[in-house]
Image (cartoon, rainbow, N blue to C red; front, side, top):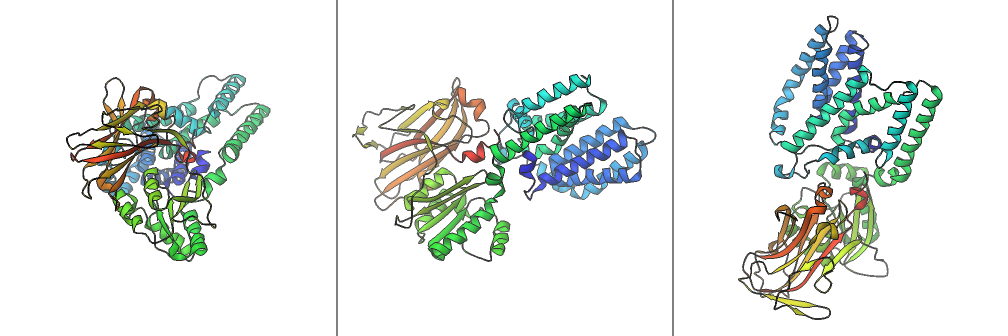
Length: 523
């Protein structure tokens, strides 16, 4: 299914998969079939070069295949194989400065300014499961391979199978250990380049000598893949509808319905290239914010922009819950909520009329507040004044950490992809409230050392005319969630870094089932 998923995406994935397959084919022709036609050397070199130019992990696969070929040299193939490899290196040299520059960044982990988590051992097993159809599909392949091996009376790998296993595992190991000890680069998408060796290996292990057994296996696997791809994962509905195409097309429809100036879109993941493509395709043009605009990555700029927006409707595409929370201060009515694996499209309205019907938002999985602490342990300040439906807590300047709420991480969250949103409602004495923040950290239970930390300050949001202010802080449960959930404390607190006087009028913590179709698609 994973290959079907990446097939229509206009990026380097599917092309790299083709280059890797072709590279292995001509390598096998030269090494195992002793087919030493010059055409085979030329095509082997061509696909090695294309792999190297396609993407760095694809280049690694080509490099390991070429180096492994040195152990298969004979008098018959050595000369032309070595010449081919030298020609590939020479052809790649003009691209080398670009490669070295990009490698200087190390990877795309947090320390490099990226987003990728350091992988763990379960990451490898999960990758194998994804290749074989996700879930427990791997058990079907395991059973079929064992049955086929027993019926074929062949319990040991052939030389070709051994090579396929080796070339896959060596690439897997290099990328994994690089990601652990240098910088994270391990992603299922780019690991598909070497995964073709694993797929071919599994195919050979299922090659039963008995035609009837082979046919039964083929029917079982085909049925499994069709079921998983087109029914269980609902591929056409969840993935085929391009997020960029949908958001531009639907925005144009909304503008036709409500008026051109009445609807303003903010696309958090769209770039200039995509905007140009779909403006041309739908013969339209309208003002919008995209990923390069500061409103999509600065909460202050976002707050300033929508607070002055004259439109009655606002479109948010691929936005996170803390941006949505700010939006609802000015556009309180959610009238459209479309989510698939590749699409998160929400429309908010300033007004509630007969023409608009409010729809359900993301599910709240866990909720806590002063009046209902739930699984959280709230600090209990002595001067906290509580009423049945509200409370207020005067905070004095010397108190740097005046309020805290904490809980076991696995008691308030349950899956990767969920989002913890903290809201602190504040009544300031004036319009100059500075350096007051809401912080969220995930601390290791035994050492109480922070593993994850995020914070937002009063300066990221706008103070209203009545000197009230909402500070939102959000934490996404990332790819390392499963490895830390059972030995971690989720800690949220107010940090009065500026030693200000103000009143805390509310404090809420929500665990949101944020975009589950996207984050849980490969389970």
